[in-house]
Image (cartoon, rainbow, N blue to C red; front, top):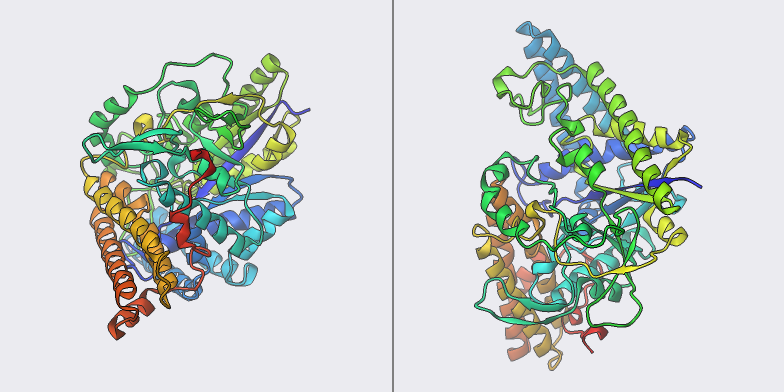
Length: 578
């Protein structure tokens, strides 16, 4: 028996940006992530398989990202992006060579070759498709794909169970469309969870009502498990994930962090270890639990991403923030995290890749120690759940894909450890006990502050207004059946889910592309408002004006965009409310 299993969970998400601007905010976000992260990662996984490496990995992909990767415009636009990067790298190479900056010129040559390689891999190896090859890895057992709420909404803050249900069921429907099977696992956006009980509207003066727990609605959608952050089990301080990524968040977190950490529960019994799964217990319900919670491992999280001494902060790795324009490539190494940009030294690819290999060896050693200790104490194998944003590997951390490849190779050779799919672990070692989890997230302070604060309340006011209107329209629509009403209500739901994306308050809080986020909120709210007025007019008059028909056609995407949306999802009452 292995002493433990490493369950990497790579969460893959980009908000809907096709046709919504390009640079600096918009479609280039998608193409940058595909070029630097998704495609190199996919290429690496197939290379590992072809070399006989037995690995298992978990990867969640949000429906809204899957829709973009399947969009007819994606292959052409992505290739145009790559050609711009190739041209920019070539121009940088000429400039650095002419000015005697040899080390930077060498890195420019590497960037040019990198983007040419990505273009070749996209066209020749993957034939302009990505979802098809993810499906192939899923079906062959190397990768377990998880779904997510349709547009990555922050579920605990949505104001109705119907809105949560629609996000979840749309996520399942969209997964079935692209991958031909039902998902078992769910990525909760931001690992955010809320149990059953009284929910108080954070924008009202005490307005509250009974709400189903997130786990009840997840079970209703036919899913089996999700991942929660460590502090939601242990009661200890949340380690967060965002402060190291955004310098602005470091400066403004003081108040929010104090508010959130003050609400953490007392530490539960010591035998509740994050290295095993738990049934999610529902307050007031005696029925057998249906959802398993797998718990993020804090030590590996600190080592890879959140801690002061995490791997990506090593001085030999490529510095993310310092770029050379007009191309936007990065040519300098971190050098020292306390240095200003002007003092960054030129990047050395050979030394950086050597560090990635060293850090992979250290990571496996750390996991072996964690698993061995737990196995000696309990007699059971540990499950080390290591969830990360996929964009960490290759985008935020230039050498991350190489590091992960080394880790998977080392785990394949290790006698005590193995990588594993979450569903397989749950089948082999199901939860032995349940736990009443408190509300929380993996955000700073462990609560909602990153998404709900003084900067973002205006967004949530609009979301809550739209959610209330959606419920009202569907209720009224049940008494009227004019032609086209169902399609209009589906479009209303589509715009509402786009409005609910957690990306918008997140970008406003971090001051990263806050103007772009505000514009997107405004546009989706206005489009929802016009659609809702059209629906009401149709129910009143029984017909549509020509300009309204044109507007509907403009907003219509594929007939099954975000899955087969059923407006009645906003009305169904879950059995948990009995």
